[in-house]
Image (cartoon, rainbow, N blue to C red; front, side, top):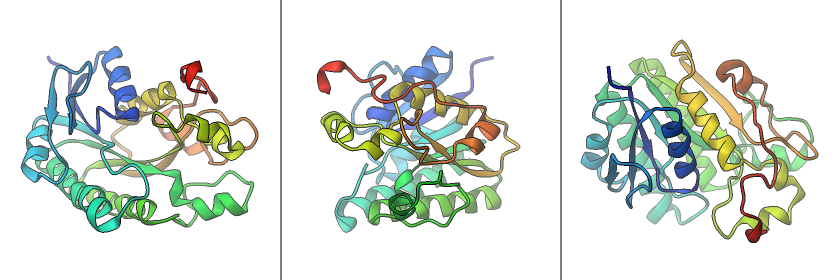
Length: 248
């Protein structure tokens, strides 16, 4: 029998390329969806999150969906966050439901706990109240909430992944200059392994929120205990593992 299909949205991005590389290396059947062709993925759909039909076509036949595509940080709400991170999220959730997929992994962000991180030194737990930094993080809080709604209403198994900082090209020096950012670093290798663990975690998980960062250097900013317990995943790397030395 052919391997079960995994759709990765945002597959041509920084995290997306790490994820599809890991999935393919593990023998998974991968389909990419992004605004540009996905390197190394034969089944690569090109489209926009705001195009509901394009998203629906990409999801046909998927057993699992990893939703990474989004405006990746704070930006204008009306022109970018709303169409990409809210309306686009709607299209992905509906396409996942209509495709009959069993597992949905939603990329959230550690920025939903921004002010706790600013004011405390304990490892923040997934069950603590959210304190989003701005509209980008607020949209991720919304994504987590409606993700649970789809899990309960439609029988999906949904995992919301609050990711650390996997720097895009040009951001590496910014992370290097901030001690706290190194503790939130998520290496490409750890990101790929995390999402494979998330997509293959037991379907008995109805809904869960977990954190994903690489190993901390000074302080554990997020509690990775539930991640290990539910997904069997632990980070293997730390800052600056996985980054080419010339960018630092």
